[in-house]
Amino acid sequence: METTNEELRRLQKQPLERKVIMSRQRVREWVSKFGVEGVYVSFSGGKDSVALLDLVRKEYADVKAVYIDTGLEHPSVRKIALEEENCEIVKPKMNFKQILTKYGYPMISKQQSEYIDEYRRAKSQKVKDIRLNGNAKGFGRIRPEYLFMLKAPFRVSDFCCDYMKKHPAEDYEKKTGQHPILGIMAEESRERMSNWIKYGCNAFDIKRPKSLPLSFWKEEDVLKYIKVNNLEIAETYGEIIPKGNVGGQMTIGDLLGDIEDEYTTTGAKRTGCVFCGFGLRQDKEKFIRLNDELPKLADYVLRGGTFIDGIWQPSNEGLGYWFVISYMNLHGNMNIQIPNLEIYKMYETEETRKYIKL
Image 1 (cartoon, helix red, strand yellow):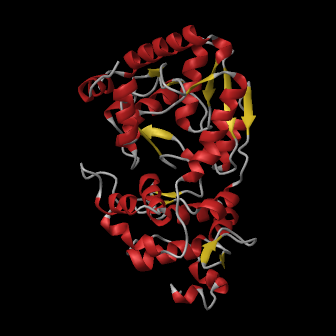
Image 2 (cartoon, helix red, strand yellow):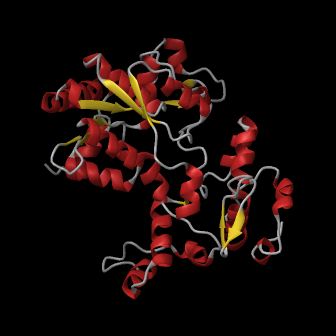
Image 3 (cartoon, rainbow, N blue to C red):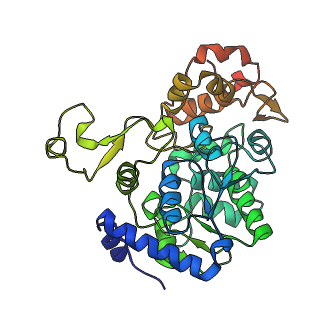
């Protein structure tokens, strides 16, 4: 049954203790429908899925976890997933380099890369007009600041998420007949909020049924749940501390021994695919941090690249992000930081200098 924004906001304001009770009820409803053997927890090793798996297994200890091993997660996040008990490993059919070569780079945002790719591949002028101007309601257009990407000498797309995560999960569900429990929260995007309003926490009647028992939680709920239950999370997050204590200052909670309502992490705030370029405009230092923590991995992402039939794509040396980001910086004024940029001058050619000069 369709709900409303007001209902979502009401649920989001509930105390964690109340949210836990409601989420466990959603899990019980899901298992009642499909049985313990008919469900699984989608487990990435990230903090949200750590909280989800603990909540589910407090009700059903034998529920299976499934980890889709894309090879793109932060090593400390992947370690958490690989060490989890009763966790099945599923691998995608294509690797990231193959997807970049065939479909293009994940840059800017999932939605905008989809629109840019559709425009560039479209044979219909109607599709192009919608992507330039929006539909009748003004939605679905490429934002003006990203129009320069229509002439980029490389492809961008949102297909990596489909081929690395969505399709392997769907294949697993078809093979096993199991239905997923996911740690997705409505606050993470407009699309997820819209889906929650339309389907609620347990979407029984859609083509791919799925349960989202944490969907009305907020970021601070996940951190507090992990803190209260003393759960292990990946090293990249650092420690979970009260927001008021970020600078080392003592809080009222410290003096009274209370559990704080709002927490943050001393390290990464969120994780995901370490190679992903979605959100780079907001997180301009992503690859600086990756280089500080995992320099060999950062170098592989940045180095290399080659032109094939006039289109830039990965090479045997590396994924070629140095050129992609440099182009976006020059033509889109994005100011995304590239560590050790001078090193990648070795990959400059007469063709790259048509578009950028380091």
